[in-house]
Length: 205
Image (cartoon, rainbow, N blue to C red; front, side):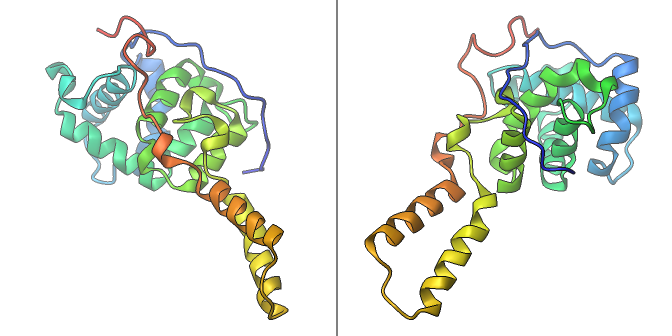
């Protein structure tokens, strides 16, 4: 994937709505690696609706309506999607990236909300991805609070240079090392995976 950078933009929110047949046919091939047990497509579709319902709300998983199945099953599916890279694939598919899929554009709000809901499960490389894509609605914190893993090679080179000269680092070097370390790690304590009530999509049924 080319490391393009796009301007920051917010996704237009909308109330939750179940997947249409066309949306499911576009989405199913993209989520297949997240469901290795080969469950029936109807169950997978219902589970994705469950994930999107919770993602578009500001409430806990236990509030999921019974018609969408078990909240535990939906949460496990979202966890697999986060750890397998499927959520990142969906984010790119719904973005302004050249590799985006026009067929899932109508799912952008639901995808960014699901990505944000799983933010604490995602690796730092995913945080770099969402920042490059500029998808503010998916970010669990302001862009400057997200990790910057791409700065790690610079930090390693600086440390190596200091050790190579076998000297005590100077005050400015220590400050730079500290700043780079903070930027690389980000500020996960500030992450918020949901919006306060009233700021998420209105009208969640």
